[in-house]
Image (cartoon, rainbow, N blue to C red; front, side):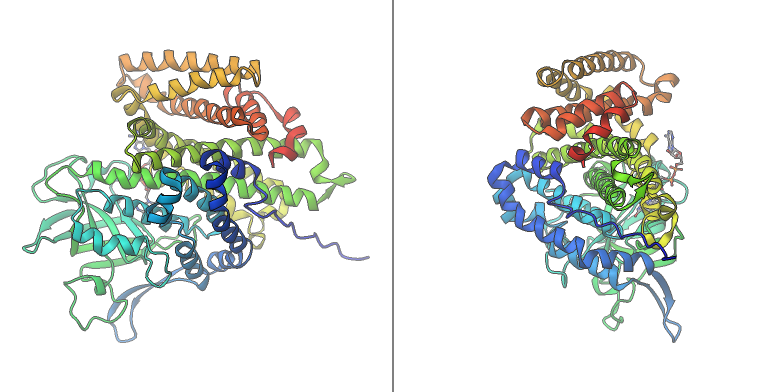
Amino acid sequence: MTRYVQPVPTPDDPYTGDRLLRSWLHRQLGADGHAAAQGRLSDLAADVAGPLRAAHADAEAHPPTLVRYDPWGARVDRVDTSAGWQAQRAAAARHAVVALPYLESARGTWGAAARVVQHALLHLYGPESATFTCPVAMADGAAALLSLPEVDAGVREAWLPRLTSTDPDTAIVSGQWMTESQGGSDLSRSTTTGRPAADGSWRLTGEKWFCSAADAPMAVALARPEGAGRGSRVLAPFLVPRYAADSPLAGTTAAAGAPAPGVTVHRLKDKLGTWAVPTAEIGLRDAYALPLGDPAVPGLVRAMTLVVVTRVHNAAAAAGGMRRGLTYARAYADARAVAGGRLADNPLHRGTLGALAVDAAGAFALAGHAFALLGRVEVGADPDAAAELRVVAPLAKLATGRLAVSSASEYVECFGGAGYVEDTGVPRLLRDAQVLPIWEGTTNVLALDVLRAVTREDAGAPLLRRLTAAVDLARPLSPALADTLAAVAGELTAALADITADPQAAGVVAGARGLALRLAAALTCALLVEHAAWGDEQAEVAARLWARRRLRHEDIAGDAHQHLDLLC
Ligand SMILES: Cc1cc2nc3c(=O)[nH]c(=O)nc-3n(C[C@H](O)[C@H](O)[C@H](O)COP(=O)(O)OP(=O)(O)OC[C@H]3O[C@@H](n4cnc5c(N)ncnc54)[C@H](O)[C@@H]3O)c2cc1C
């Protein structure tokens, strides 16, 4: 008897095989703009399907280690990473995954939509980057913060070109040191302090509890300036060089790669997932730091520039991971036989995949919209985009994070037992998805942020306007879809009016997560409708099925199985 060996599933090219991505780019960039991006996207897709897939596997198989002492007893706090991780780092620089929206040439070609192209790069790069998307996000957030006019020009000139370099030899990424053991969500509990030095630099002292990309040459740390008082608003962002080479406090004899004086890496976290990312606990004792803006001016609002960027990156990572999980699950279904036929022809399995494809399309549209808004805020300071982004950033982050976890669980199941076996590479889909609703703000914390935005800043208004406009766009496509959207718009209008009357009521606070998820689901439907109305057939099906699944809570498998080939 011959031993059966399962043919290896071969996923499509991540760029040419992703119809929704391509049509989205066509609409957002125009035919010429998309044509101008095609070379970059094809190059990256080819790298992803080739050397980067291997680098990803290597980085996952060889997690980072911390070397605390050199052979002679000197403290070195060196984080050793794999060749795969270094290859991902170099690729992120070469493909301008961080740099693109800052490049003059990109802004010249795509204007505000350079962020749309960056989202496409992240969508391709992220899912098999061994979570190098985490340092990428933080580097982009740091670059956005350094770009603020209130940041000292000398500091900007010294560090921004390194963050946005496309040369792997000079490009750096950044960490962000915010969370402390006593409070991650509740930053008012932060105890790290900053005191000014005579030369305009500062010294930071405190303990940071979760510091990802602990090998990065810099970090943005939050600290309480001496005498600033209590609360979180007064916390100020500082740039902390991680290595002696960038710290004027180090002697000229400091060894290459030596830690900056006062920066101690206590240990690396042993995490559920994101194994390749070095996440450390870091102590600061009078560590050299450069203020990002005037520390006397409450700084949390400046730090939010960074946080908005990392949150939309989180949404991109969630949506990208969902799409790649779908691609793999579909490839496996094409290659696997069950019940006398191909798994991919089985109506029950097709229904499962079809529903997942609808969720993936929704997550993509939501993340893509957030990037488009971010671009309009940065290039042109569009006030409407700023008002909408205020609520879309937390909504996109929280909704896609949850979708990514539920989808990843299904993708693992789609592979049967193989999905539970480490060296297939499938289990990490679930492990790594689980971080998405946690870091950069948990679901509840973001839901409270949305509640604040809609009750104090009238941030619900742009969403309701988008929903109302989508009802008219949906009418010629599907009267049932238009009716659903109209009903949801009415319910949300009433709900927002109700909660604004007493936003502190315990019932309102308890319902914040439900409200945020309903707002996100409605917005997603509107975005899919907009894309459908532009002429995209896949978005039309996805909008109809999304409305039934996520707004009317119906089982769509019976419909979704028929549309699977269009949806993925
Ligand atoms: C893999 C990984 C990497 C990370 N990397 C970094 C990093 O590089 N830099 C960094 O600064 N941080 C990092 N973090 C930390 C992360 O941002 C925090 O863990 C997160 O913000 C939650 O904070 P916490 O752990 O203190 O949990 P808590 O804030 O204690 O939350 C515990 C629970 O309470 C809930 N909760 C908290 N506040 C409220 C509220 N007001 N109302 C209702 N519910 C609430 C939360 O939703 C959660 O369910 C990382 C975390 C992980 C898992």
